[in-house]
Image (cartoon, rainbow, N blue to C red):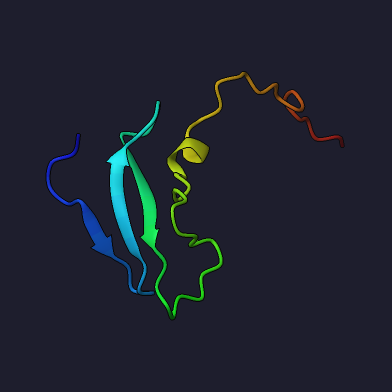
Amino acid sequence: MLKGFEHARLACGCRVGFRDGVEGSPVTVVIDRKGPACRVPVHVGGIPVYDHREALRPPTRLIPSLEGDYEEEG
């Protein structure tokens, strides 16, 4: 599994744990325990935190160009 950290505490008071990830992401971060004063609605105990790296990857399909070269009239 992972070497190093097993748990961490966020500034909001939530405690997170690190687990083996799935395809495309080596680590999954899970909210182990929601902090009593946490006001972040996406922090739910036992639910993984979304990995944004998948969304930042370049598209795998070709994107057609909208128009060819433009020429000025006049």
